[in-house]
Image 1: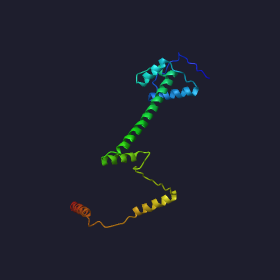
Image 2: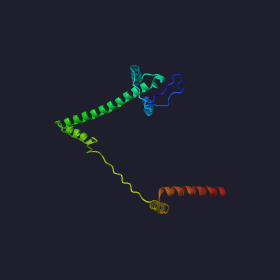
Image 3: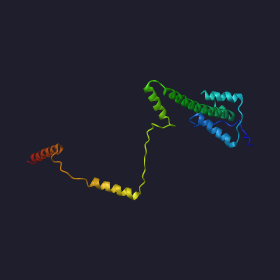
Image 4: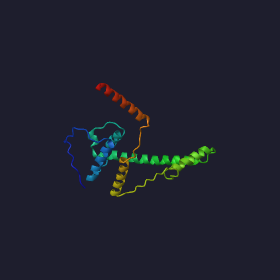
Length: 187
């Protein structure tokens, strides 16, 4: 087994760590400890420092760089994640059981709503809207031909007379005014 030599007179860096969260920093430090094969057993002092870090108290970078503290914080974060997942699963079971009990309610509106919500549970999936998207791959040549045809239709669009429209009449009136003005200036 490899035992690292720690030099205590090496100064810490002058800049703050670039990690965004305590979890990221602890995860990186723990991975380094795993890579070198050294996971020390935390002392009671290390456990207190770890609990303080989890509670949000400011701890020194020196304390946070101690392998024992890192190991303890990582263990607490791992346990917290498991508890959250476990409590979410328990809550899901609780809600499902309550909905099942409500299906026996004498009020038909409550019975119907509880059955609807039970059907919407993702495991059951009775009332979920499903959208199917079918992708049909076409060769590039076929797509280019379709594009050419559509562009040709747009460019060679139908020509029709617009002289009877009110907009055309207004444009005609404007042209008469400009013709009259040019006649006056030429006199």
